[in-house]
Image (cartoon, rainbow, N blue to C red; front, side, top):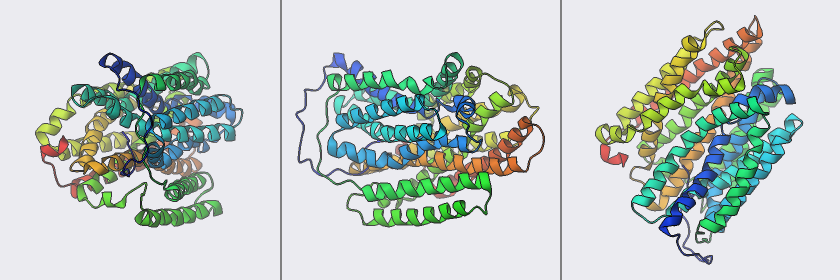
Length: 483
């Protein structure tokens, strides 16, 4: 979840606010807000099972195809904190409406794309729309629902939407691709986005606007630095480590990210307050939310290709192939709050991370003649359990003891690191895949499986790093910090 990226200045201007919604209308308020957030979550995975069809229609290379995912997640993650700041200054409902309309419009452009560059530009614009949408949704729940059971219920539903969105996206993408076209995985956002934009002013109360400045320099430096880094890895996967453009990309990324750190250390209202890293536990938690997606996000990408190009699954069947992971995750998360209250965050977190390491290591042994039950079913179940046990304790660790004035910045940074970790991790794993595939021999299925297995191996090492960091850095496991 994400909220405002920085503590807000005292309010100086306020919109004419409508009266808070009556209890009978709170269900409609929640439905509108959650639909906006769910639309963003679904889009993070809805194109996964459509990737082979997109590759065929728009002539992507196997490594360049990852940019269909990266173009979205990179702009989303890079601008997420700035999007929260826009909501502070311009008003949350107004920002959410603009974000939803931009998301819907860019989805239309993507659905009509006739060449690869067109689609990638549309996906990047979708990420900008998502960065304006996601941070405003949580704040609007807190301002539209009275404190007490109604707000707690709404927040519980909201918190589950990220996982539900990613899972629905895999199945929905398979259905739309099989029954219509991959283009409908994007075009479906258009009527939903328009409906949400129309409903927002009718049901949702606007928030006050606050005086302040945008940390545009920080946002640009951070996003440009991450883009350069991902681009460099993609070039390495296609051309090798001696490629001039790849080396220039790494150099530019280093300079930009150092500049980003300097900007944030001096900015009056930074999009990433560096003081959030002064707590040992919080720093360890942030490392976890960066590393875990980096090790596991690539699994969706490669497993989708294996299901369709090695096992011969249709897009619909490939989407349903991920259901064991989804069901395992949903089953486990129901019990995690009680486990946190009884054991504290650290034991639950380490158990979940250990299962993710085992799942990735299992996939490392994948062979072309492995079937779904022997090669994929077990790792998918372990991934579902591991994810279910890992992310809620990480969130609890990061937000434990946070001052109320910094809760928005801490939450926004949490979601930003999740998206950036997934994007950067996918680019690294695609690089490993491309390097292995260039030296592999045999049928296309053999080459794909061998390259993917190597990528899973690196993913297991990244997950192991997350486990070790959490084990040795995070120290406070008292249950009271899981509230």
